[in-house]
Image (cartoon, rainbow, N blue to C red; front, side, top):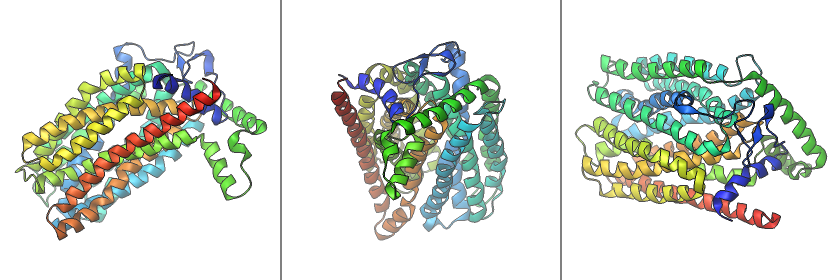
Length: 486
């Protein structure tokens, strides 16, 4: 049996392990992955406009997150921090921000799954997060010292993630299994487009920003992505469905299934009394299996690699490649990688639905690790652009296949909670990458540029570890299929 068949069967198996009922709500027809095809409840995305409406918020979130993380914050750190400690200050700032995002996402996911307001389960949190994040962007520009910048940036990231998890859960709520690869690709295309366009705009504008001041170029660079997030959030709130009835029925099924699972003695409910028993009970309550944990380990590894590239490439271009205008160079790198991502995403999504998720993730690891090592040879903007193409293809494969695989693995009953846990792992990799800032500065102090080279090596290893965890998960799926006679 091939991997795609195994992957298609696995989500239903995982749902069973969590003690959850596999039958769909509202009369929909179950597909073999635990999702539903189009049924009486209208689940499924059709038409170009449906894909656009479902994906537009990804454009806004990526626009504000990437322009802030890649361009604005590195330059604002230079405004308020010593030159010799810039990597340390930036690492602290982004690590704390991502740490907050890691903690808030499962909590918001849990609340979203339990919400039964007339406005829906997801919309209230999307509205709250987007509204507060846009208002707090003023603080990023107004900060006159590192503490002020830290508080403002962390709060912005926190509330962006209040919107992110419920928005991600909509994918499980409304998109059947056989559309998730394509829908993940379209959302990733929207995100890549938002990232590229806003990085180009803010990169060129921030090249004119005078270090140590709060000039007009800074405010324009902050204002544009803020407006984009606000517009796309309103678009989503108005045009994307979020049915209250579905939420109430699913909540009821979750409680009933949990009681049934306990009565029948599910594997997780048989844990012995004590610390191990409490841990297993918690894992059971979250609906997390061993294969889920392996997948989350893979997600952590992939985003650790991506986070290293996000965190230190700007200073690498400035210090090692010695570009005259590093902000513009970073914009060109991001634009090139973004274009490669966009061109890769749709075919990757189609392939993910047809041949399975794992093979594409293996290729992503090879290209990501190889592209990272090419930075050792970079000596000009042309070299950087060519590397961006390789990394863009790797990222496109991951965004399509990885997000589709994560969506397969979450349950209908606890979609937002488990999406929050998945995002915990994804953001955890990004956050962990920021811990390398002090190491980069320390090693650079011992030998010029050595800190950057060590980080690149760690990045390449992280890509390889992602492939290792995916292979381990797929091997477990095959072994279980053989035992059960699938």
